[in-house]
Amino acid sequence: MEEGSLYPALQRLLLQGSVKAEWKRTETNRRARFYALTTAGRKQLGVEVSEFRQMMEAIGRVLEDAKEAGLARWEAGPGKWRQDEDSSVSGHFANCRQEVARRNEIRGSWPDL
Image (cartoon, rainbow, N blue to C red; front, side, top):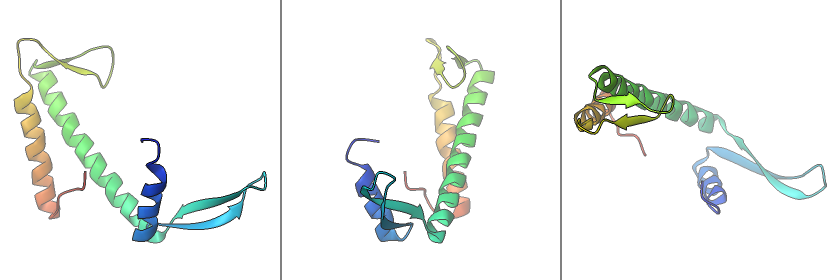
């Protein structure tokens, strides 16, 4: 997260009703604003975490297919895929996009990315 983007994001969440805020004193007696998720915020967080997991599962399936097809390989540990010089994984990533689109059609909306 870039410097200067946290408080604008918190303000947007506050206006949306996803968080609530109140002024309190810290242990060092400094005045500070404390934020907490609201019920609506918890519900939205659950939806977004679920969508994120679905996206990661779809990407994982595409990468696994690429690995099985010999189009990509592990390099320097888990999570670091590298395209082999003489092959293309673009078709597999297109499949990933199609899978995400299919899931979103079932849900009836596109995620905000």
